[in-house]
Length: 429
Image (cartoon, rainbow, N blue to C red; front, side, top):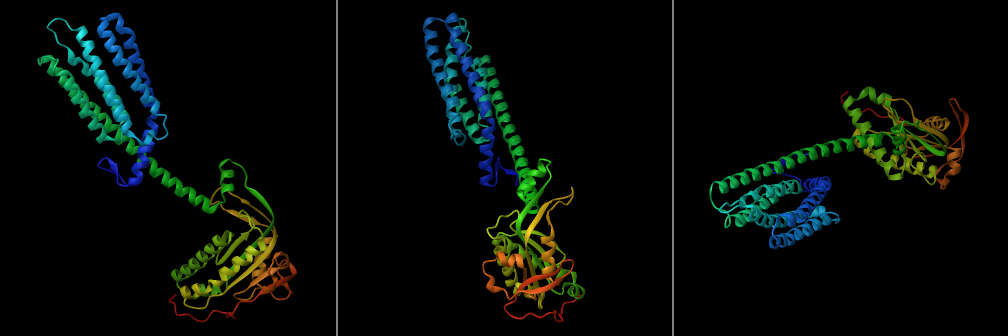
């Protein structure tokens, strides 16, 4: 967030948001001030017949009636949906009210003065009260408020100078009016700066909150985040999901022969490519385990046919092996294992939280990966039965899986034979 420059934010979009937010927050106070002013004007109209002559009382009644109508219209227009976008409405309404109050002051003063004693300038006090109103209503628009003060001052002088004796009382009144106007300008400036500072801080905090929120939602599903915030346990069961386990061939030996920087670069390229494929195919990334990538179709992200989605995702990842070769500078092989069945998902622990999946289906996918050809896919019988395009896979054969026993497996061989081992490379370890 950039600091405000010359009273305005450098970014027009930020300035527009500030103006909308500030005027929206001041709206209740503007309405309260408007209603209070109407009550004061009404009190004057009730008291005037008691103290004033009939002719002046009728004249003031007309002026106060116009003031009430204008103030009422001003309050009413604040309920217009587009009022927030129109600060000129405040400018015009308050200037009109100031003019009417000035005329009322002239008549009231003429009623109160004694012979050869001119006191018209005392109306400066009442006008400054309206200036205070304007200082708040036009906060955030210092130039507009300065223009308002200049015009209001001109109206005051034009009203008073022809009637007021230019003696000591007149100059003291002018001094009071000018000093009061300067105070109102300072108040307007202070409100503007403080509200801009608060808005800038709020924008910065909101940006940080959005980053934190994005980070949290990047690690956890939205539904899980809501439950954690409510203090509830996150535990889910999925009856028909397909787990995908992708591993890099020969990674352990490769790690012994290349520099850490090149190794991290290769893994980053692999995982970023897998992340893009997952986003494109509606597959949920679960986690990375060393050089392995674990994902699931049909978990938190719904899938019409989890087996078909998982297979399409696996093929997309394998299709990007050429990119990994360019990063590695040598042959890179991937193997994929997919198994479909029930899984349990949830969040465990209070630190470094992540949404994970457990169950035999996850273990089975990891075991199947080890039987796949380099650059190929191994799927279980349950995945094969769910898949629509089974012709891509070869005939059924039985594999002995550790901890599982004899299992029916189907292989999809790579498009072109890939080496079983990685050749020597020229990187400096």
